[in-house]
Amino acid sequence: MIKDLPYEERPRERLIKHGAQVLSNAELIAIIIGTGSKRESAITLAQRLIMEDRGLKFIVDSSVEKLASIKGIGVAKAVKLKAAVELGRRMMLSTGSDSFTITSPEDVINLMMDEMRYLTKEHFKVIMLNVKNKVIAIETISIGSLNTSIVHPREVFKAAIERSSSSIILVHNHPSGDPTPSREDIEVTKRLVEGGNILGIKVLDHVIIGDGRGISLKEKGYYEFE
Image (cartoon, rainbow, N blue to C red; front, side):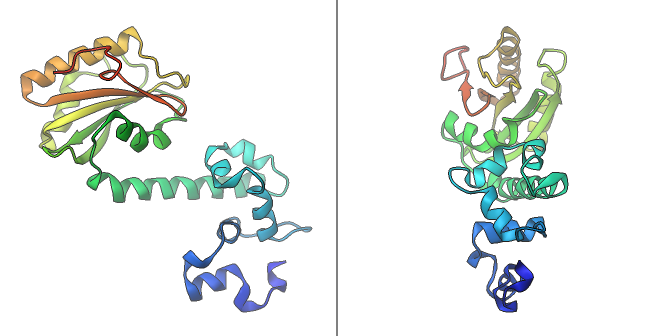
């Protein structure tokens, strides 16, 4: 048990004295979950959680229910783990997006995949860029099945104008996991591209996020972007 370790070798005390960077993945997880069980310490439980080919990605990809089903974890520890993952993701976005430069559809997919791949509803977002294609902001415009009544040009370009955006990239997810664009996706894109041309704010692309892969409508030739 952790309490049986010398005081200076306990994860929490090591973090305080030396910093979080010196701790192993299992030790960091042990601090998050707090306690182990009657038969194993928090560190041993953490090691078992990420043993073999699981790794940290196992925690990222697993639902609360799946984590909670692992012996010794339970709902309370599973919730703490998922909260830690989400907080880390948000910190990454908040510190990195404002200096992130978009040079290809892959950049968009990499930027948005972790945030959007597991959403159970369609989220339509706009990435706003400056003249050097650096990300100014990312805003959610609508939640729900994509159609021309929900995604209105007024709402899309209002956000872009307020941010003094030079151009925008449209992004939405398909909860099915298949990023193949629908007829409605094409119609919405056409309408927004035309609106951007009138306002002088270019729509550079529309990227659809699936489960682990994405599709660029521009790259696939679904629509001619000017």
